Length: 135
Image (cartoon, rainbow, N blue to C red; front, top):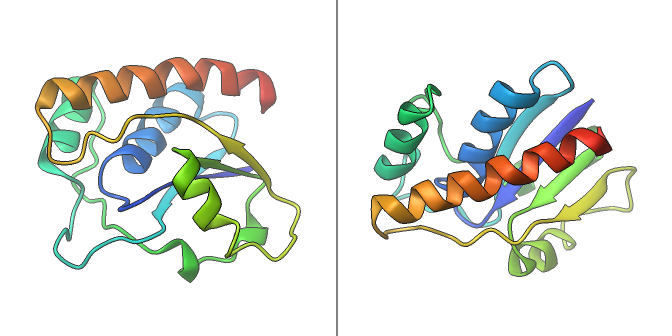
């Protein structure tokens, strides 16, 4: 089973989701992340995302943002979009493959305080417990 988390820039929400999923649900699937529009100015995960994941015992320092358009989305069993805007953008890349798209409503903490990243991580963590029932 393969699951892809998709957000806008692939520097906050989706790498945090992939890291948390590997820790919480790693025995159920392979988890990856991508973004609809990752920028060239952000070569790694956001510093606050790295710090919050470190606090939770997860190392995402090696994460490099990547474009969802560079992936074959038909290779994934589930694709989880982090908000409605990303969900709409993602549908442009799908070719009617077997992947099931799940929409999560996760507030983007990009360039905000570290507490916003902690809230984001907690939201994702809670949603992962529901995902366990789907996988």
